[in-house]
Amino acid sequence: MSRKATALLVIAALALPLLALAAMIGEQEWLRSRVTVLNVAVRGVDPRDLLRGHYLTTALEWNWERLPQPEADGRMPEGALCVTAIDAQRRPRVRFLPDSAEDRAMARNCLLVIPGGLWASDRFVPDALATSDGSIRLFVPEERARELERLMRNRPGALTVDLAVRADGHVSIKALRIDDEALGH
Image (cartoon, rainbow, N blue to C red; front, side, top):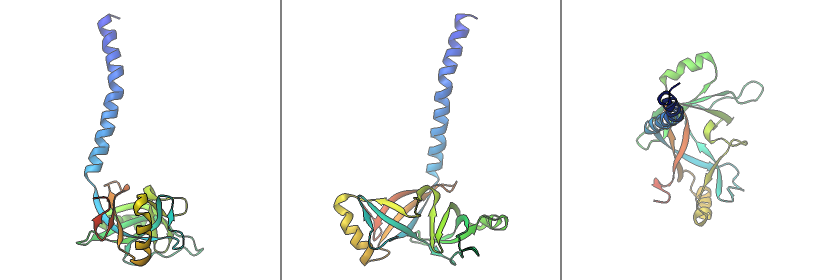
């Protein structure tokens, strides 16, 4: 094999991983550019112990069309959250989609479908945000932690999160808000 052919093979071997990495970054940026932002109120999971270090232990307050029902044996069903409407304040109206063929067929009537799990009849946690106990931990600045803890106790619904939901259903926290003002801005 000539030196020129060997050099071309080496260049191709080195360029291939870079091209693959660039394609993966491009895909993530494309998904990120197509997010829908939902504003959802949060509530304390254990009102006696909201603050743990720099984290508030919370659950999302969804605007349910009707509350999901437990299985006959008391277990909560597997499934996803169907966002059916988003009002002017970006607060989502939702219903639960159990993981069955007939319910998956109803997903076409959803604006968004968010994979996750139920921990109680009103407590749905997106897969990407779930902890082992079904709560969501929100990082808060140390100097504001006690204030936010008091706010959650005294003014339910004043503390909200902006959830960035990608087209594939992946959820991330975009901002924490107090009375619709972004924390830290």
